[in-house]
Amino acid sequence: MKTSVSKRDLLARPVQPFDPSGVGSFSELLERMRGTAFQGRQLGEAFQVWKKMLSSDCIICMGLAGAMVPAGMRRLVVEMIRHRLIDCLVSTGANLFHDLHETLGYHHYQGSANTDDVLLAENMVDRMYDVLADEDEFRLHDRFLGEFAASLDASRPYTTREFLYLLGRHLSSRAKQEGILSSAAAAGVPVYCPALGDSSIGIGIAVHRHKTGKRLMFDIIGDVLETAYLANSATTGVIYFGGGTPKNFIQQTEVTLLDIGETAQGHKYAIQIVTDAPHWGGLSGCTFEEAQSWGKIARDAHMVTCHCDATIAMPILVTALLEQQELIARRRRPQFDLGGPQLAVRFPEGWQS
Image 1 (cartoon, one colour):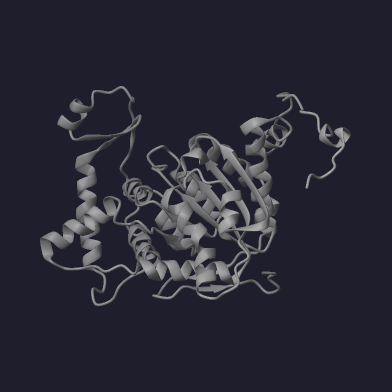
Image 2 (cartoon, one colour):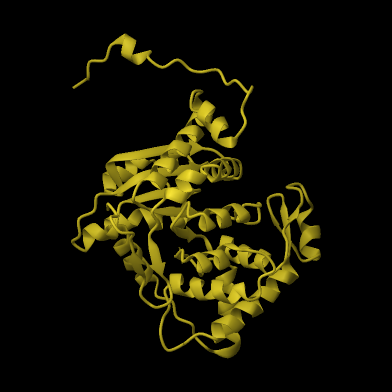
């Protein structure tokens, strides 16, 4: 049945031509972009939804896909963790391996997408679109990861959250610069990597096992249950930069809760910055509306999708959010105990879940 809406109602909000004069902050930039259209407007709306999360009692989970660290986004993620713009991170292994690389004082380099790749291979140089890295340095990290794995208790499995917390602490004592894992360990922010084997971290641990025969076991199903329990403990907001495994892993917490007999309301706040389209049927481009059919997103959720390269959207959004000092200072943050096999969470007094 069609809802009766008048023409006056349909034409109630004029587009506001963007006026660059007097824009003195990234916050104001995004506020003005909200009055425009297309993906500029959506980026402005994403800013508003993220601020709603920060002003509400909710656990904010972020999914980080791709290889954002080689593209120069590491420091932004560090600042999100330090200022608690997010409470939980789910990442690809690639981001975390490249974070380790930079934390130990190594670099990624600007190159060209048109470089001769055979020449690069002959010189042991790896390419990620227009970013270059030294393969010899990466192989040093394989040994580093193997030595770290050897220091852990091989008699029991580790969730990726516990493993990455311990790795973050290990990196802190050797860090040349602040990294994602070291900052998360210091701030008590849990980090998950459900596809850890699909990365150079997995390769490093595999090489160690091949050489020594020593097995380090991971409890990935423990990650699934732990994140589901976390989602069940409070209202949740989700932010996705890209799609892939991190996005689905966070989305599926609500389905897991339903399957184990718990009540799941779906994530209350939702932002995604994606370049994938929904009509190919993949999860990366899946709309939040489609996710509502699974119960992953709340029916009354505040949600926004912005089709934009994350290396464009993330610097603008995060810089604008860091300008919200009063909002950040007022935020009531959940506290996590990451030091053991079981995750514990504590909420401030008067928390409204």
